[in-house]
Length: 319
Image (tube, rainbow, N blue to C red; front, side, top):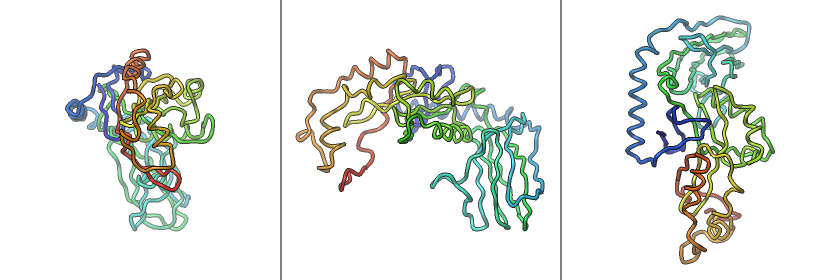
């Protein structure tokens, strides 16, 4: 069973995940809502055992460093834990955020971090996915006086013990660099910090293709995180298909694509609208392509969204 959310993230039962080559039934909204309830039920039931026993407590020590440094770990086991660190100044502004719309930065894989700061009062919050409780603390820095924080996050729900994994199957990793190892390393770091277990990169956008992804992704895959291949093909004017567990794109399914729409509307820098009268189908796209490839590769194919859900510039016009 898969949980598919509106932004193409997934939470998948571990028993149907085998190197991301999985089968799943058609998913309706009712199944999605039921699955959410099942996850919450599992977490609430498991919280009695995961959340009560804490063997390690957070400590804060003064150091001769102008800022904050520290480590994040599991409060129950003491095992190092990568995390997202949010540091707010007295005005509530986030320090050194990686994203524009998500505050904070990410620790190293071993949970360590270091941030230079000026004198003042700050609020630090550490996060790790949805399976740990976040932790907040206020810290006051003096001149040339900083602190080292050993942060232990309390488990909220042991998702993996309950049989769940978390990931995304429709990831656009844009790059102009062939075999972009720096990008993959950064993606792995961000995913580990937020409790994401796997990603499927859409076709060649991470700098790899049908023949190079296995060797390239293997360097960033282990028992904590899986980097896998995927695509958002075939592509029709009525929607895209994205995949979990796909091994190759067969030339981006160009033989199955809606070429009239692609060439006369989507990729063209003239015209702002299309209709079936103006841009006819040369023939009905073969509906057996997706079903056939799904069976051949033991993969999951999902119609994620209509093609018209976004706007994009083409020359001097916007479509």
